[in-house]
Length: 456
Image (cartoon, rainbow, N blue to C red):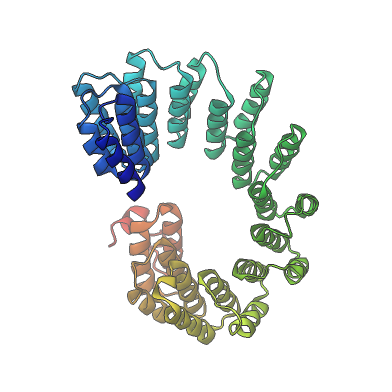
């Protein structure tokens, strides 16, 4: 920043600040330093602000994350008699997309259409991205279909959007269509598509894309491997997982990428092979906390709770546990019904840092108490939480009240769960069962949903 001011001072001394290209560069320089105030001062001192000057200022505000100001600047720009161009609309749509201002984005779209700029590829790509981000696939498709030329960027945005919204088959058909149109996928396309497929646990298509990508000469990076390994683990598919592991070894990633060791350990545990996961950990030169946490979480997933607790006890003098470590241990205590140990670990979290304590930690202990029959104590703990109980908390308690036949506390849990839960039918079903189990049906007729809805 000091260097920027020095450069600006020299320009002023030499009287070069009235040159429009130099003045625009000064505005850009200050915006690059995230100094909006000084950029604005220079901008206001310009004898004439053309569309280039406005775009530089607007682009800087977009990059700085000041999205509301972007729209205000565009309004001022028009008030000053300067018409937006393609770049202006691009920045405006980027601001709307990044901030979730869909209504503003649709207004900008209408302005673009009025100006006859809708068929521009840069603006069209941004419109497609904005609509798919908000799940408006019909609108995205209309814009896409109207483009006279479609490059790999707009194809990527549309296909990824269909995948994100759960239309995997349609997205896959679009991939084939894109290839038939002669569009060559680039590395961004492959990385985006593989990540989307992995997120939706479509392991077979992930692997097909993975091999297609390599056939086209695009080499996978560690993030691509991580995405596919996660998908293999989530779908409990060790066959593909082992194939990907072999490729990781061939590319020598395993020896230098801790993130991949974490993914491999997680994948093998989710596929039921905790022994091999531990072997990987033991043989790895990277035994940091992420890898250790992956192994602990993996063994907790496999139900090997004693191992998790023992490993944490033995190693706590050598390494410092974090939130994920404690979560694995609390899950293990919950699985084994170890109330005293669970409460001790919960206290230990608070001693390390109050910021470590999360909903997940507290819900583990509440679940442990409730499932063990200590429903009253679980409710008492909820009253002393450092934050408001969430839907998961009240659902845990509601299920426990059904298990232990506690109608009074069940109604209390139901009241809160009903207020917070989007799954109303599940909540009502549990409460109805509590009433039935307590012989509170009326003349053999279940308590109605409308009557329960009036409670609380």
